[in-house]
Each structure stands twice: as C-alpha cells, then as structure tokens.
Amino acid sequence: MDPFDYVLPWNVFAILFTGIWSVVSIAVYVWIALCLHIIARKTNTPNPWLAWIPIANVILACQIAGKPWWWVFLFLIPIVNLVLAIVVMWKICEARNKPGWLAILMIIPIANLIIFGILAFVD
Image (cartoon, rainbow, N blue to C red; front, side):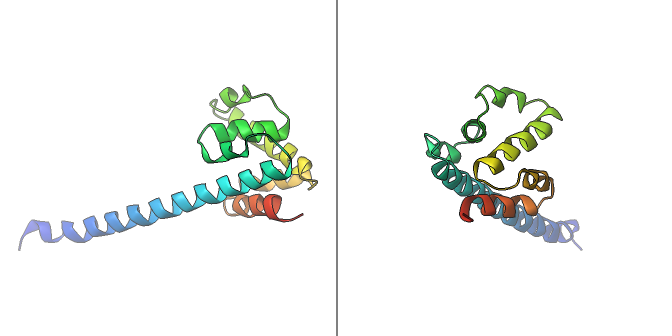
C-alpha cells in the first residue's frame, strides 16, 4: 500500500475547507461593506464608497460616528481596538436613531451581521 493513499483525502478536505472559508469570508466582507455604504448614505456622510476599501471603511465608520479620522491608528492597538469598536458602533447606532446598546451585541459573532443589517435597512 502506498503511503500517499492516506494523504490524499486530507488534501481534498483541506482544499474544500479553504475554498468554502474563502467564499464565506468574501460574502461577510461584501455584506458589511454594503451595510456600511447604506448607513453612510442614510446619515448623509460624504464618500460612502469608502465602505468598499479596507482601512478606509474604518475611517468612514469613524466619520459616521463623528470621531476623528486618526482613530484608525488606535484601531491597530490590541484591546484598545475592541473598546473603540464598541464606542464607534454605539455612536453609529445613535446616528441611525437606534439604541446604543445594540453596539454591545456586536461582540456576538452572528449578531454583528444582524446588527449591521438592522442599522442599514430598518428605518
């Protein structure tokens, strides 16, 4: 028996898992960018197309929240970025006339996708 007979199924599994994970990651990025774009339009924030560009979307989120653009550098600091993300999302919720406590739910993995949808599509 060839020793590579045992390796082939694992390679196929790894390739399938990587492919599925890539598609899911792209879908989540597109969903968040679309929601942020719509939120920016509804709050009359200039340049809503920045939602589609990595890093620039953080600047756009800070603009929607009424925070300075240089906060993007603070997002590079571990732990600080979690606190700032909640603060920025809290202000975005308030800008969309939603309760600020929704920002705390952003910590929950699937809930964060739902919250973005609520902020974007519910008036």
